[in-house]
Image 1 (tube, one colour):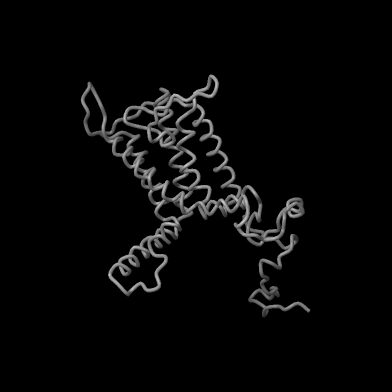
Image 2 (cartoon, rainbow, N blue to C red):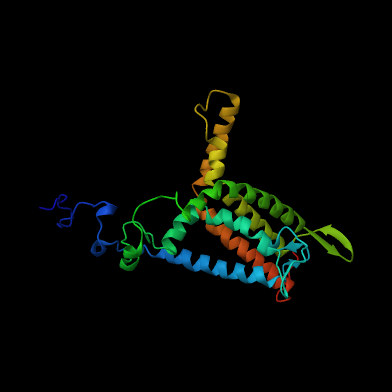
Length: 275
């Protein structure tokens, strides 16, 4: 006999809520649960295709004071694979990408959007995939998912690149006209500034940084240093609440910054000087 809640104001009986584990394919959610994984699939796929194209293009990555984040820092290399020159971006991009691909937010999104494991909470896996999967749960302790634990080390590489991109952003404020360098402001300057602010918010709202600041302590109030760390941990925790938002906005901003440099460097667009 089914357990029911009291009759509501409409006079209808409503079944008691069930746990996610009890949901069957015929009782799946009827809201737009597919929107988030579909949106991530489209956006991340587009980013991956553009980044791959730019990494192999090896051109149009510098325009005046603007240097594409895909090619920062500037590397002067003369390596060739046959008659093809090896792009510096192929040596640079693996570091920031390793940080993103092992990020806790991206793990969840990639598992849902690309692996359908599962595609959303309280939604059954596709039957074909459910039959193919190895159902003994191993967490992230076996290959290849054990490599996700590299995230805490990738964070340090990401911090180095944040510093380099801040340097590039400062350089975007200085223009050379008639052989003289002067302070200025172009549309590209604002693009670079927005990008580095979003990247900084994403990097330093990371769970690894949050643990680095406030983890490994048994007593927050036992010393001035511990109290200071606790205060910093609270501030990092505040921006950590929007980590997923910073993750997606910074993904868009770094791609759009590269697109802007590509357009200006290739002559398809003129950088408008505001100051």
